[in-house]
Length: 184
Image 1: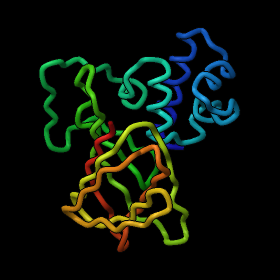
Image 2: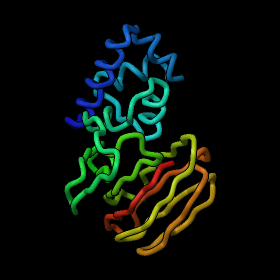
Image 3: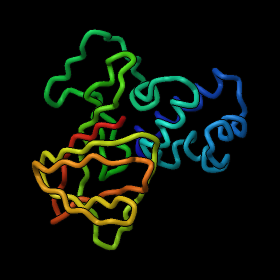
């Protein structure tokens, strides 16, 4: 499994142990099946952003701590130079770069997301999380499914949606897609 996923699992375990909770107690507090949670903690199963945000929210920590092991420090502004955001590559075809992770008490999580193309036969994974999301396509084309509706987004297109609805995406045309995701 990917080294980043293993490190996220280690940070989950560290948080759980710091809270003096069993795996069952911690999983239950987050609404996650204990068997699935243990797979996350052991780095054997990938976590979605929505799952990480849920865990962070339930335990009053910043999602950046789980994803990047980095505590936000800036309170006036946080500058991210091109290509210099803290990155995590969750699986071989999907990577995130946080663009605002160092800003303390931020109201939104901002990511540059890169999705590599998959075979057409691969099912799109859908996730849900509280709040809203904004996506702006920087490069390529993607199929975005929201609550059963298929939308094609191209470079320069943007969409704002209720992220509590099931949503998932995939790159089109055999090329990667890169976009900005703002999660509120």
